[in-house]
Image (cartoon, rainbow, N blue to C red; front, side, top):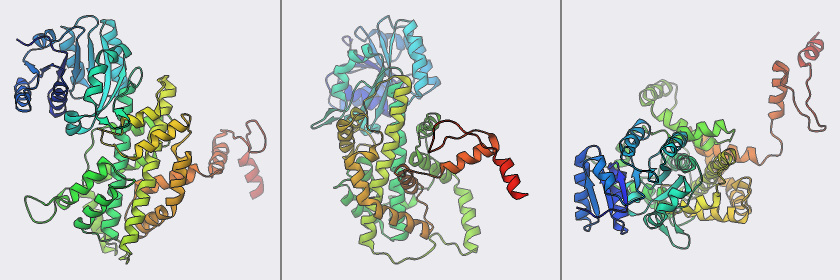
Length: 485
């Protein structure tokens, strides 16, 4: 029989198994449980193979809970929604006052807040913890975003500090995010930024391939090169890898055989909905979501292509002769500038929510814990951290002196890429939305005066003036009628 273990983990799909093995490998004996018991045996088997790790399997929830030292801590990694409530119900039957449950799934933050209240009534502590890094990260060091009971965080801080990704010079990629559902919220926005990042990279690929006519070999070499500079990041690295992988079932490269239809789990959609609820502009993230919706209409797009082909519309409108080297350099700059806008939108959304909920989140600290382990890890997060270190009240990343200079240096290339894409009939919704966001934000005066005048004309919504205080209403209709008579 196992000695009392330090922690328990319930839910042994890919992420759960890998996180359990990671915890065990860092020297913390762990009990594991799964409703389908074959997964328990599989995990224990893996633990043996991967170095006789201290993983103890249990086939029933009661003996699983009893095997953990008090105060007990159990991490759940099950599908968001009803399965989480079901697992809580199963476990809480055996837990005692002062024990703690941690949900490590991609849960909607309000569900976490509801469960915290329910658990607190039973004398149990609760944390909602975002876990990023996919299966690789879970096994070797993810980025962890725990929010909820600070007392519960303190129970397991020693484990999290060792299990999280370790970044030289900035430490483990974990921090106590804040109260309530803040951990889940931050993970949700992380995923929204990830949607934006992936879309921008896909657009860079499309322009280079469709207009620049780069082969997969050339794309592999371009992205590998980009991964040595300012764009150094996990997503650029895996993109370079993808272009180098041949098809194992037929001739050619695998990327060309993958159906152009993107799936999604919902965190990107939640991010855009939250942005709308908080009146925060997040056009890059929204554009990436719209692109996924449109990609899903594959059959319709096949038919539309036929309709427009007969009208003389090819896939690419004009065969332009382009200077490849210059195009590659321009696209690199456009990608970087657009990326700044995407992260700026995500950070503004987190800040707005933090203010609304009184979470007191530190944006620089979030940038720090995203530097390793997670899907959006990138060298440029260090720059974001430094921007918030310089000024924690920074209104927008775009106005940080360093980022502002970088955008100024790159804006000509950015405009060239977007214009080239538009003239070639290649859609770059993410890059275009980022550019429009930048151009709107940097202008002192925008045409909203006309929109406000229209609102006052048809709905008497009133307007303010630039030259005097107060609210005004004009009888536009009557005046216009007189002028017409």
